Image 1 (cartoon, rainbow, N blue to C red):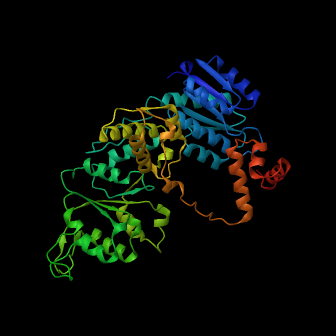
Image 2: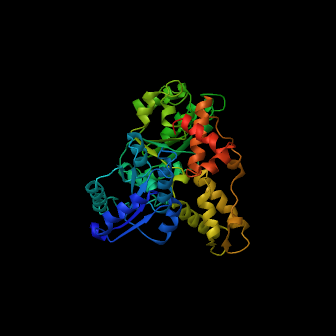
Image 3: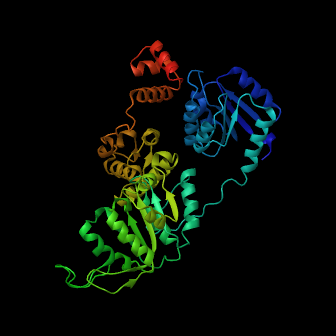
Length: 448
């Protein structure tokens, strides 16, 4: 794409900056729009499309952390995850640049800028549009669909395409309810073992006494209730895929037993001296952070390396933006068919309530809320009032802060409140229960 065909949006609270940007781009692009108030970003994006957005990282000039820019970057990404965003600030900091790029920024520039540099950055982004996103082929999956168009879920799909045809062991990470089971089944059904068995074991549900008999099987008479020979899950999955869910819950002793089997590729059933070879592709899943698994006091590192040839992290629903509405439409259609109801229309208030909710229970909670809404609906239109979220998730107790230093707690609280209020000191002071002068003193004290 040529620079002369581009449409540019610039957001900065400095009128001089906006004037300079307008003069710079006016004769070089198709259209340049400038805006002083970041609160207007979403309404502008609702009516116009832009190829590149240039966004200041600090507004109001009071808190120079870059958090305001990151806040509005997230809002832009939720509204439109295809438009490139260049973040620009007078406070150059390598950590801030890294954070912004991780949050989805396309580039990071420091004021005062060189005109040639910013024009080249925009042109580079326009050139990359042709090749940025490789095609994502639909994944075959029996009985259900893997839906998603957001960048974070596209990354998962692309990794699945590369990994599925191999025999590599895969570790799936993610919060409860994100769909780790679905990812595991997709890996199997798109692999060369798709005609073999897919065997799932919920390790979190196995008592220590059942661990070996369930996984490795037993011979008749091996223990009191062993009235006949029985194959274990490893042997049952031979030729196919074994999915070990909640692997982060097993003890160190069980980990050692599992590691031996994975290294030797054979099992010994309880009550037998004969080994049985097994040919499996191993997939594991856990909601435990990989950094916590790496703690030798609770999980063996040699086992992590054995099960983690490739790691796939399933993003939480709150990070998937427009996928929430896509999934909602899918589940509403499914439950309308299940309960033999007419097709539903989703009112604007319904979809807005969905988008505003953080979904601590992820896709599982979304399904629960939508199934209930379909069952209880009074008409063929779903409104916000029809949407009731799980009381289980709502009443979850927040984790206690790990850092109990009073000054650190106060500093972090001030930062969060100021960020929440987009830098408005009056509103922030009122929410914190202190005067404006007291808040200014604390901002100075913590060098914010």
